[in-house]
Structures are given as structure tokens and as C-alpha cells.
Image (cartoon, rainbow, N blue to C red):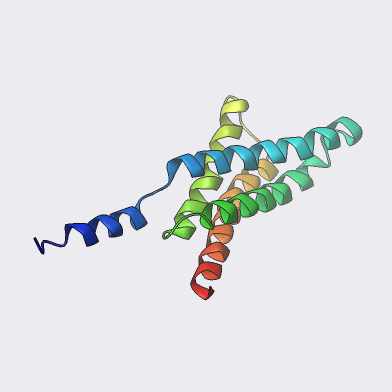
Length: 129
């Protein structure tokens, strides 16, 4: 009767975190990064990866943070950061959390920033539309 439950339900739907999309976006960001770095590693060795991995981390997480952010109604930056976090955790799991060179630690930070930037751009595009 006038308790506002219908409106509260809509608000809750808009505020929820879309974990499936985040997991897919993080997985795809890390998979794309791996597909980029493997041929470079095979052709040129490990040294170029110190430059390619941080830039690639930023770009792939930006793209998939933007992709996920374009499909949610709120918390765009949070969704993007979580995409970067998922990508980072996948890499850490694949390497069994071994100590890393500074370039790879920087790449992890750039995954978070790239995802956040992608979510921010998605949110701004939605508010402009």
C-alpha cells in the first residue's frame, strides 16, 4: 500500500553490483592481454614485456571496464575497478603469487586505474545520452 517497496526495489536493482559481468570483463581483459604478450615474448623475449605489459594492462582493463560500465545503471567506476581487480587476481593466480618485477606491480595498479577510467567514461556517456 504506499510503502514505497516498488520504488525501493528499483533503486536496489540500480545499485547492485553486477558480478557476472565483472568476472567476464576481468577474464576477457586478462585473456586479451595474454594474447597480446605471448607473441611478443616468443618473438622478442622477456625484456619488451616490461614495457608492453603495463600499457597493455591499462588499455585492456580500460576497454573492458568501459564495456561493463556501459551495461550497468550506477557505480560505473566501482564496476571498472572490480574488472581490473579480477584481471589482477587472475594474473596473480596464474603466476602462483610469485614475487614480480616492478613493471608488473605497476601493471597491476594500471589495471585498476584503467578499469576505473573505463567505468568513468561509460558513466559519463550514459549521463550525456
